[in-house]
Length: 318
Length: 96
Picture 1 (cartoon, rainbow over the protein chains, first blue to last red):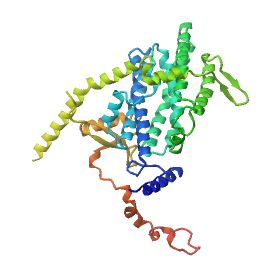
Picture 2: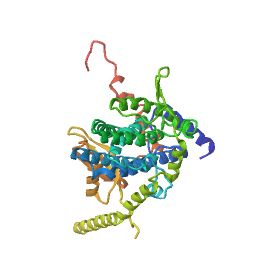
Picture 3: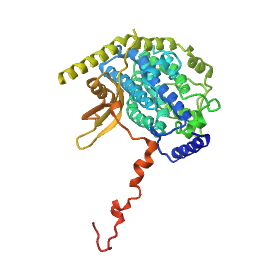
Picture 4: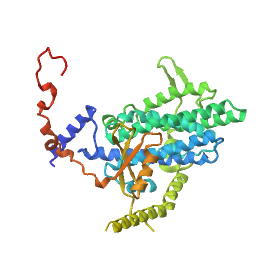
């Protein structure tokens, strides 16, 4: 194809998207669109998969059967969300094995929030309430993103996600209304998860490199700072309601803006965690790669069994 | 030991309730059809989204090429006479 032809196709492509028409896997697309989507979608999938680890840590120690079935269902949903997203990404021409390879070698990133430890039961509450809360704010706009398979996967993910946040907040309510020690535990979890949750919405707009292109392709509808403000404005009253204190001395309602002003985020910590120096980066990868390696004989056996069965069926048919 | 062969890809179609058609829900990897059905139940119908599931190995699907959409679909575009609005009726005829 000549350069002019490509420019023409690109122009038509951008017009399609501007008209809110979807792009489907076999349609022509600029190479950059394909690569950007492979990167963002696979990292989203990886985040779901690694996201199971901090919570999986507490399934066997959930304080009641009610809490245990809920947590189990939530972690199972996360596996499901990872699988929807991996298969949607595969439609762009990358294999599942290549994506696992990228995750396991550290070439692909996942959400840095999962590199923090879950040290008490209250962390299950804080994760559901704050981390899933921030995730929902990030994900809802993606339900109308331009790439069809991604948008369809996100519609399903968003539908399932709202129970995750509610079950987390319910845990926090219960602890906040419990004994002194239980309330302390809830407050401690909020103290540890608040700032990483704010970081989860991404670098400030000034630092964010992909924003303009992502807006055009509808991978983003609002900037990171707008999303962060939305998250803060919606979460602060929820904390007030259950008598917990947001760990930010600079947090103050701004009458004029109709929003909360908040303190400085420690971006140095964020970049450290992204670069692999968070408290649990090594641990998470060890758990993930270990599970993959220990499962290898199972995958091989299932394949061998399937082939044998198919052979037998073929013989019987003769 | 290295994995000799990866599990193939399957397309999943789910009928959400009787009276509706099976609709494409997504895809997944499984060693064989039985496993694909079980995985499809766990991945795509955790909240009663279905009463029937079809799985078909993705390699068995033949798809039209969007680059040929012109030859493929345009012949139907100028055949307005296939639509009821093409035909003129006297105003007196209210329902037809």
